[in-house]
Amino acid sequence: MLATAPVPTPPPSHLPAPLHPLHAYLSTSPFLDKYSIKYIHAREADPDGSWCDWVVVASLREGRERGLRGAMDGVKQFLAKNPVELDSSTTATTTTSSSLEPTDESDPDSTPPAPAPFAPPSSSPVIHGLPATPSRHARRRAASSTRAARKIDTTDPGTGWAMLDSGTLVVHVMTCRARDEWGRGIEDVWEGVGALEARERGEEGWVSSARREEMRLREEELRANMDEVGREMVMEEEAQAELDKPLRR
Image 1 (cartoon, rainbow, N blue to C red):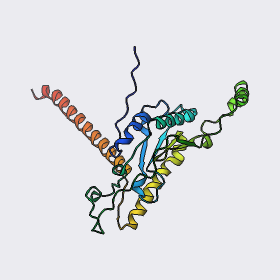
Image 2 (cartoon, helix red, strand yellow; image 1 turned 90 degrees about the vertical axis):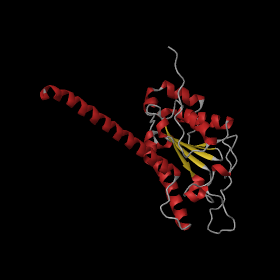
Image 3 (cartoon, rainbow, N blue to C red; image 1 turned 135 degrees about the horizontal axis):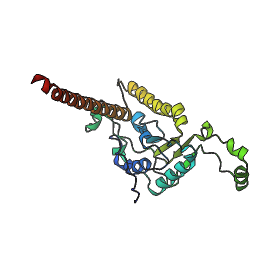
Image 4 (tube, rainbow, N blue to C red; image 1 turned 180 degrees about the horizontal axis):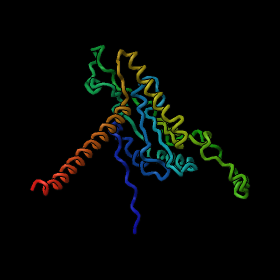
C-alpha cells in the first residue's frame, strides 16, 4: 500500500497569501504538531515599533523532543528557498473595520496608511537558541557511554526553545514543555502591546487578528458540538417513538 503525502491544514483566515506556502510546509512537517501553529501579526500590534512583521509559534510533536534542530534546519532551508515577500497590503492593521476603508489624507482622524514591511526577507535566516553541535569526538564518547546517554534530558529548557529570524518574520519552535512555560507568554506579550498601542490612539477593546481567529474557531467548534447534540436528541426521540408504537396499539 502506497503512503499518502501529508495534507496541509487550511491557513488561518487572518494569514495573508504570502505566508500560505510557509503554513503548508509547517503543517506537514514531520517534526511539528500542526494544530499548535500560531501566527501573530506583529505590525498589527505595533506598526511603528515592532522589529518584524509576523511571529510564528509552533510546538514539536509528542515524542519528537529531540527533533528541535531538525525542525529548525528544515524551516531555515524552506525560507532560504522560499522567502516571504510582503508588501504594504499584507502589513496593514486590521484592528477595526475602518482600516479597510480608503484613507483620506486631509482627514486627521482617518486611518493612517499601512506601514511598509519592516525588513526584506533574508536569504540566510539565522537560528538562535540551539546548543552548539557536539564535535565528532564528543559524539563518539556519548555513543559509547550509556551513562552519558542516560543523562540527556530532552525537556531541558536550554534545548527546548529555538528561534529563527528571517527578517520579515520570526519563527519560534518549542518542546511541549517549553510551550507551556513560555509560548503563551509570547502571544500574550504581543496582545498586550497591541492593546496598549490602541489605548494610546484612543481605541478601546483592541483584539488581535490572531485572537479573533481563536475565538472564531471556538465558536465554530461550539456550534458543531451543539448541532451534533441536536442530531443525537432527534435520533433518540425518533427511536423512543418507534418503541412507543406497540404500546399505543
